[in-house]
Image 1 (cartoon, rainbow, N blue to C red):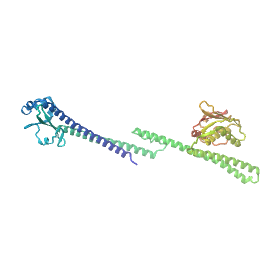
Image 2 (image 1 turned 90 degrees about the vertical axis):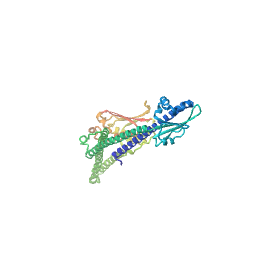
Image 3 (image 1 turned 45 degrees about the vertical axis):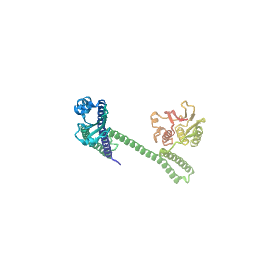
Image 4 (image 1 turned 30 degrees about the vertical axis):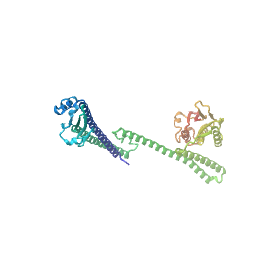
Length: 448
């Protein structure tokens, strides 16, 4: 794994390399521009001389060699010639401002040549005057001023680059020290932190990003602590709920061993109670397993008929609760959802209505004509109901409302927890209206 400091250094080197490449390219473009400008000056001067000499008869152009016409007229009319050395050859006459014949040797007709790695530029051309006489003109451009200017720019740029590298290296090194110091601080805090000293050990962050990271870390710790507490509470509550039926079953087994073999009435009472407690344990374990494997459950939507499912659930519940009165008028209704989850959802809500309904009739109403294009299922009882404070906790694990008034009601407080999780899996909504001692109305909204 690459360290942060090494990554920053690599990126710094890449940045300096890129900057150096851009600098070299800029210098190359500048040098090319200076050379091209000098070549242009040579050609402009040659065009001027071609016009001036070509427009004159031999009697006038001979003044170049006798009266120094180059300085007297040509250079006055065209100042570019002041930066050039002019050589004009005509028969045995030579006008030359250049002292180094080696430079003239590289001259080629109508082509700019360089001498000694662009120390000089040379351009040669044959010019014909009005009388048909041919003059060989050679122009020499001294590039020393341009080279001095170019190398001065190079020195300035290189000096600036070196200074930039030194200053940026110091800044990067200083930044790395700050970051490493901050990371070491966070590492030390992380080694000693607990939720009790979370605020005490909170480091002073010099960078906003570290402060944001600490905030995320702090929130993560609190979430983990909350989940851990819920897990511990879940285990304790589950253990308690399982211990009770096991203890009861153990008591009835002792009763059978002592008196049941000789007393059929005691034997039947004990066996009936053991059967009921075994069923209760099976139900509890089934619910605990559903909650445990919830993350692996996938909702498989297909077209199902709700009335048929509700009738089946009511029939099975009446076998468990023979005294229950459940009113339902089937209404053929199709929805797309998961059949297994729908059965578990409706069963839990109807069973809760039976348990807390004070043996009063329960109404189950199915309506598929909702104006919001949703199918609604309403389950209402006339039982003990809930207060607004109790209603807030209805989805909490092992929470049971009206404990003081429902000691005779069997259950584990997991039904509504499962209901809420099923609703999330099948994308359905629910509303619960309840009043103390006036019953509860649960409405489920299914997408058509």
